[in-house]
Length: 273
Image 1 (cartoon, helix red, strand yellow):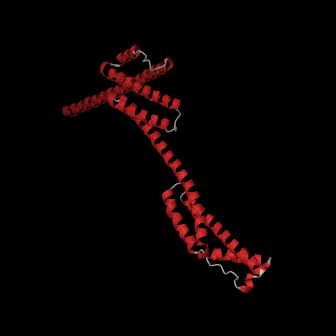
Image 2 (tube, helix red, strand yellow; image 1 turned 90 degrees about the horizontal axis):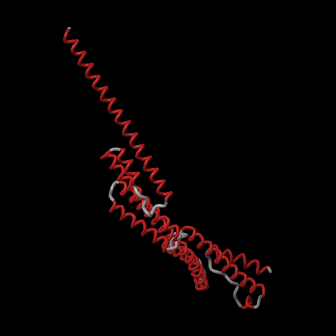
Image 3 (cartoon, one colour; image 1 turned 135 degrees about the vertical axis):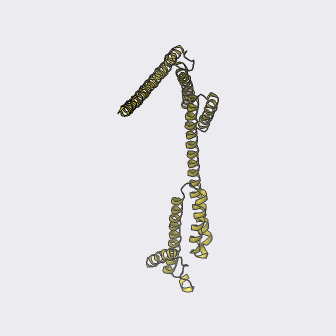
């Protein structure tokens, strides 16, 4: 019991300090139960402590590179070299095999997380691209560029189909998104035409053109009603802004004319004096 306790203490100390094991050897020790117990405990404690230290070091490496295999490999290589530099050469093969298994297991987990990270990044990139292309298509349609708008719609649809294909987006949700983008582009195209009508022929003509629009088959009745109501509000707001601007311009003009007349009157009076 004394030999076992002493062996455990010495084995742990040797592992922590990176020192070789000093077994009790010799003819007398070979026949000594206490010395044999000491040596067994020494070796067991030594290997156990190295195992614990190795796991802790690998855990630190994983914490520093949880989802980056390239960084993990570099750090793990450095950690392995550090551990092996303090291992008793008599146990180097055993420790190396144990350490390699621990590193490979950890690397497998790091690689799995790296795949998840890359997949998440790819998903986010495609979602951003979809939203960007949808906004661009809407803007192009509103500015009267239907051909370029159609190309942006196609790119958005391609991104959505890619998300569906990789399982990152439900098929039904993807179809709903594609339909929403297509309807938005049509709405903006209609609004562009109505704005141009108002500019060239006046707002009465624009209101009349809106009332004469026929509902495209892509629009449900309630969707078309919402659009026409929104378009009418758009025209009304633009008309009010234009009326206010014209009134302001007229007032400014009248004010300027009045000032000029006043100045002329003052000049005339001064000339008569």
